[in-house]
Length: 440
Image (cartoon, rainbow, N blue to C red):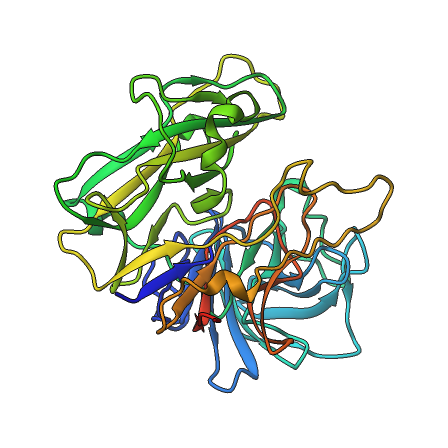
């Protein structure tokens, strides 16, 4: 059986956007759509066939100005900003940010062009396009910033300050983004949950909680075809991310007393469960992830992995006392076995003092790790198809990349982001699958 690889790995085809968002009806049908901020901001976009320009439609719940920027941060951001006046006329400006201040109007170039605009039911929607050049890399995630004001600029006046409550950012793969599926699609399927049970979240700024979970006993092999992040609404402000690790097949536990506690405290009991990340979720990621139609993650029968570790990161900045949480992840089982198995491969450096130590007083520190060709000897002769990648670092990570090297030359990136965002960790679908072959 040919396997699909999740590095860590999923796939989705580009399809016309169908998701139901909060804003007004869009000016046209787009390839992609997403909700940037729930009930506040939506974004639609399409890229032309020769990748020379991209058409956006930004919709924000305001009757003032709205703005979208492409950036690695506020400084240096390339920004399109516009508003619709009381006569229905669209005003649009090409702006450039030089720091944490009001972006300047850019009179040296014209990268942004307004196409349409309207105000409807308290929302402002502006359709615009942006020229692309060789400096733009849409094959990998980029950071988008967006902001809005409450009023339009008066004649001969500049835009009002947006304040911290009317700005945000989102990291997206503009060429391989896929809208999450409707949960109703899986309503009649069997499922199992890995979740905490009324866990008392400590009144600490940061907590990493680890718990071991066992796959239910199934008479035969089953395929997981999708998973959903389960977060209690009352705790959305403190649940930052979840990682699920496969335990080594040799790991043994007392099923009546599975390890459960602070990750550092239970490490001696769980050290066989931190080597291979199976999947994950972080703030900004899709709540539901669906696997490709031809593949599923195997459970039951002779599949060797029986135990999994769930590592939950809580970000309790207010140091709130008395919070209890039962968040976790749900796994939907397909009714039939699929053609291929999905597997997971973890690349990188372990985040422990024995593997990674950043020296003090350095402005930047590059971590290089290599998966040598000899490690591929157990790959099938037909190769393993990589269909997506999930990068993960902690707070100090700002750039992440994985390179495929053949004959001592870089031939492709499995993942490349100069704008990695700790608050937006999600599966990045590759625009084209990459096959990894065994090296004898």
